Image: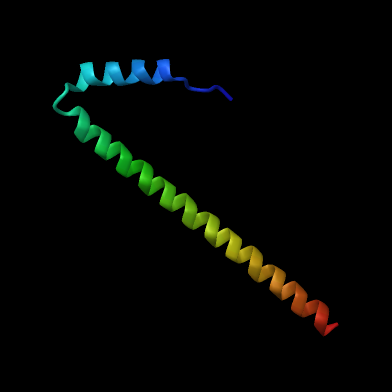
Length: 68
């Protein structure tokens, strides 16, 4: 998997400031941060639901083993 270093980040930021302008750049950073936060919460919720399903399945399996 390729890694992104500080130099590549600096290039992206510089190009972004040139394209967006220094006035709109902080606004865009806020929007991108909000999108990343939303994506992280969504992924976390999915992981929690999958974990809960796994826990429920394990408890059902244990109940069946005790019953037999």
